[in-house]
Length: 419
Image 1 (cartoon, rainbow, N blue to C red):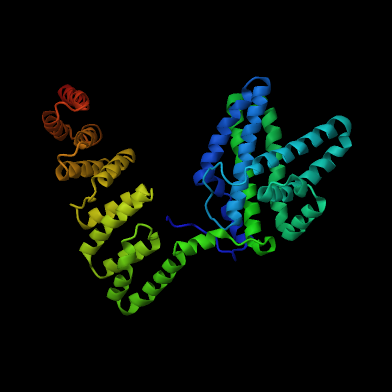
Image 2: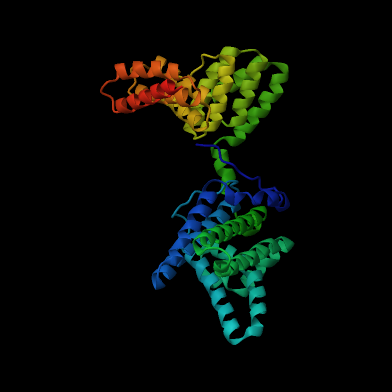
């Protein structure tokens, strides 16, 4: 199981607040902000179709925001993945209460203009407490109970004013969005404003979750993130790391031995790998660093951390220029990534290593062509590229990429002739 990023239950809300502003811009939360912002284009559909489609988008927004709050309240540091599971009533309950507030504001504007500001202020003050109640149980009747709302408000003190301020800002942004066509083209204004208030909604619910997490005992909660971390032996890893640090000052070899078994597991966290490599470097164990590099590169790629794997690869190449991942899939993945990142020399090295180590692999034409492109178009080594293409076309005359190889070969030859 991948390592779970958790927040300790004793972490003060004031310490979490500065980092919270980056929460909607990470992982699934960022994807949700972008996706939901673009989905607001459905509001441009004609009449009731656009209206009901917009309601669906808002329901999805509140549903994911509720998931974020619950996830945070249970002690998870990272946003939750987008899911249709969990409390299915939360999204519709939240949109119902927010539509009710909008309806009250419209009634006040039309029939009781002087009542508008009291309605807005009371709504802004009550909404965070109502949102928290709805996100937990989806019970609209309980959420609208003034006594229940007051208990939530008084339970948080001055920190409660933060989600109140965010709600006011969301309302302001939505009002501006309705007027934005006078300043920006609607096709541009719609996703920009939608992204902004989706960001704020997720931020607000994350902050409410952090407030609940800090006071979880008052809500009768046992944060599940810590329980999962214990099941994942994260506490054991931290204890092991501390024991290794203590032992390393007395007997570095024993400290290395303490880590050896754990390094074989792909779920071993980064701090343990780093501590292991540091001990190996201190003892001058070059072969150990390379062997561990093979293991950790495979683990990083399996855990979807290719950029870190690429950095580790470069570190191993600095130790041994002939180093190559021992798995052809890993080598190919890193060659592709190096190409995308503009690291042409590293990409060529990996591709050449692939060709020489696994010459019979069906992927040889692909990586050979990749190397030839980098040599000829990025590194200005067209002569070497032509030699490589000549070998590839002769060895793989029936391959699907044969025509592409010949095309690149002709292109490079024409370029050399024109010079």
